Every structure is written in C-alpha cells, then in structure tokens.
Image (cartoon, rainbow, N blue to C red; front, side, top):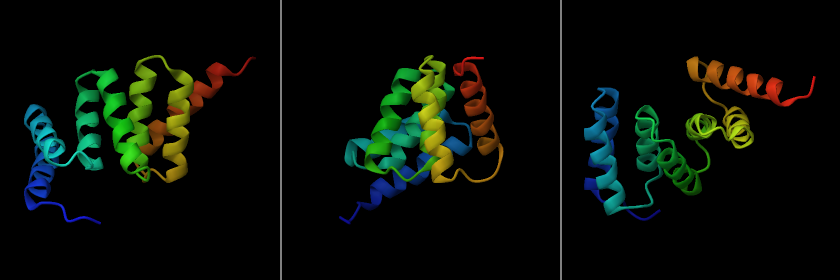
Length: 130
C-alpha cells in the first residue's frame, strides 16, 4: 500500500476523536481535510456519512457511504449507516439490501446489530403480501 502522509492520519484521528466528543462540525472539517489530501481514505468518507446522517442530510450520506464502500467494502457499519439513509429516503429495497449486507459482514453484537435486525425484519414484513 502507498504510504499515507502523517498529516492525513493526524486529521483522520482528530476527526474521529472530535466525533466521539460530539463536535460534529469540527469533525466534518477534519474529514474534509483528509479527503482533500487523500480522496482514497475510506474511513474519512464513512466518518462524513455518519455525521451527515445525524444532521439529516441523507443524499450526501448516501454519496459519502457509497464512496467509502467503493474504497473498502468490508465494514459492516458502513452498510448499516447507508441503510439508515436509504430508509430515510424511502428507498426500502436498497435499504433492506444494505442492512442484509451489514449483517452478512458481521455487525458486532450490540445496539446497532439489534437495530439492524429489527429494521430489516420490519421491512421484510411490510413488503411481503399477507
């Protein structure tokens, strides 16, 4: 793998830290800085998507997460975040596919896993004819 400049790693770690602190605008700026230097940083795109989801900017979430997934399709969490944005946009089939992929990739046990399962089950119930 090509060597990533240290500043990219620094901005990425700062963004993740700011995000955990709830300083979303600062975190977003850090992730944007990372992408400005190295557009191939999947975690920065995913971080942007997570923040934009909290801010209700669903179109941009879908863009950011599709970018993250194109760069690195192994993160279950990215598919879960994508699914939530697609569901918010009323794109149920795509959302269900994203949730299923998150489960297939192995979302870690916890609140997100339970939420993913229940969202998917609710969608499958709604779409099946009675």
